[in-house]
Length: 512
Image (tube, rainbow, N blue to C red; front, side):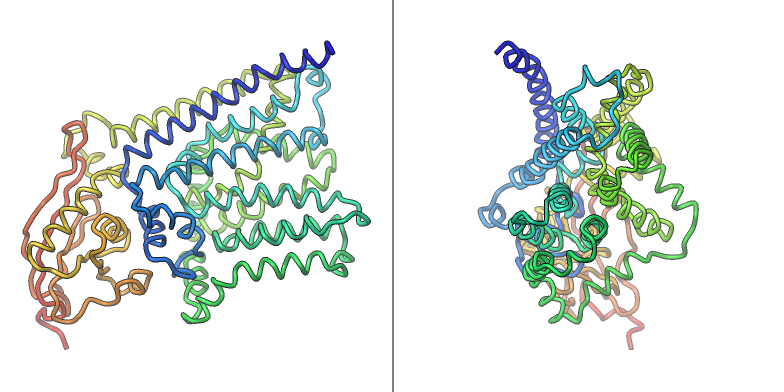
């Protein structure tokens, strides 16, 4: 009885700390969810929900489907953003649960002098802390991306794979194989790179169950179920000349490979996810390999396969920081155990220094987001003229003004030079069609088609990514400025939107 009561007393402060960490994350995400306008990708994916389909040009459909009920209900951006915020809570708790489970199974060699002071709840707390201290995880918690969904499925896939690898062949495994099929299907509906964690599943199970597992019905049932779930993507692509797969192959290959891009990738990853997580990953990998814990080395493939592939792609210029988020969340439980053991054994100086460094990085990032850049800079300062955070401010008002001007001048469409500008306009100025005036075929061509010959349009230019007016041969006959909008924050200039009435598409001199 006394032992039980002691455990409750010990566990209670840790649960309080867990609640505090999660509440801190929620408050940060809700605050910025109300403050900021949608990013490029967020707007693009919420348009998926506004225009539901079996699949889309550049991504599978789940990121749109999951937002569809709120979009149909007319929910504001801040409410739609509750979805990624909920997903952040889910994958934080899943990382905690997996860390505790791996700790119970002694996934890493225990530090002898830490055995009396370290327990599973402390390890779980470290996992949540690692998520909270990684800057990019907050980006995914405010803006819904396919990676936000894939992170949940990856952690669940790791858990199911671990159970399948350790379950006696004589025991009933149907529920596990069914769960594996569902998770693989949901992963495939989230992002095409889901093939990488699927490869980790296959390698791990073949290594520990042997090829003989293929002579059982379980794997084939899982494969059939996964194929059934992703069939909307396959059917849509079959009807559209497999354009998504062609785009992904071209997009992933990038350009000429350069070593300096790989070095830049490593530096960006270090800042985006934090040196503390890098340290934990290094310690965990070294200890697992040193102890020859091959099952857990198999689970590390959920990190190494996508991370290495993304790193190699970065050499060709074809990667973004958040693409590795599912890989890092897979490493988080192992890193949490390794760091918790080092801390409990008295190796605190370096870990504490890295924790403080990551807190500073996050606080600086939050301050820059709140002020939309560096406060006090004049409008003509180079850092103000090319402010990457300006992308998150003013688009809602600019979209409303563009729609109002278009209706005032009896214009039937809006137009921009690049899809990254079009996604926000198409969302905030909906239901106005938006034409992207480039030669690239993309989702906007599927949604809105080509601008009709001889048609007028309201062309929108943005100061942070400014283009020449579309008056080259074969384009508009002429464009006249009819309005502007200055986006400001705390009376400080952020960016400027210019609205032009452009006449007669295709009538510019020099057309054939």
